Amino acid sequence: MIESLARTNVRQYRYFDSIESTNNEALRWAESGAPDFSLVIANEQIKGRGRFDRRWVTRPGTSLAFSLILQPTEREKQNLALFSPLCGIAVFEAVTSFLHLDAEIKWPNDVLYKRKKFCGILVEAVWNGSNLRGIVLGIGINISPDSVPADEDQNFPVTCLETAAGHPVDRYRILQHVLNATDKWRVQIGSPEFMALWAEHLAFKDEWVRIEHSEKSSIIGKVKGIDHLGRLVLADQDGTETSVETGDVHLRPETPDDPGGLHA
Ligand code: BTN
Image 1 (cartoon, rainbow, N blue to C red):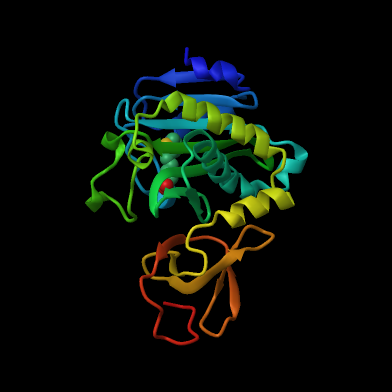
Image 2: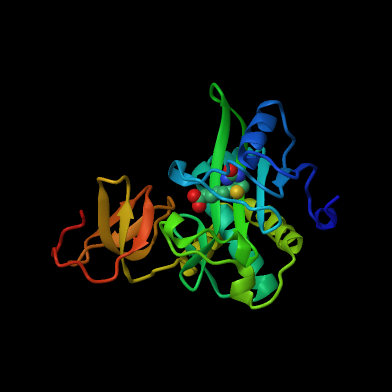
């Protein structure tokens, strides 16, 4: 029994010492009727998955790797695209309140400390025709320095909470805080407070970034904020704004010299 879970609203949980991916297990469980707020958690993942089919490494005892299954209410179903920032907000709130770290949210949902990523999020849905069987919120948090993969395996700088905080961190207390923050913010999903918190702690504000859609296509722009649909608002050199729906954000070190052009 993970004691911290007694201080959360988790209804049922499955713990694995080693698993392929907690998201895979949670998708199967959701398909067979998992109750709202069920949790899959593992000490090690051997085939952890990230966004854009990337690998996510979880070495034993170094990290948090878990997947929370939600059964969204009718109101929450109107905001399915915001479940991924919901996780970003929950992790942001957990580490700022519990560890007093000045974290930031890299759109749409990675959580950073001093521009280095310590948390990745993969949200997936299970459908039976047009019937939603559940949403799986997959969250990976690097806790100890051994959780941090080698630089050459990464497409973005990476850190962990113990390095950021400068002291040992109890990963199950972080889990408790993230779960309680998820519970708190899901009922406010899409509200002005939710959108304002996300926008206020957005990384790279007023900086030039490159948004990659694929290896071949990307957009360059200055980060202005988030629109009411949760899209990232970018401005070009003339100040003309465009909203971006998906993509991977990379900091672009210098101002582009292709005036006016949003496309890289
Ligand atoms: C990313 O940054 O690309 C997202 C990484 C998501 C990793 C978590 S760890 C728990 C859950 N299980 C998985 O296989 N992936 C997510």
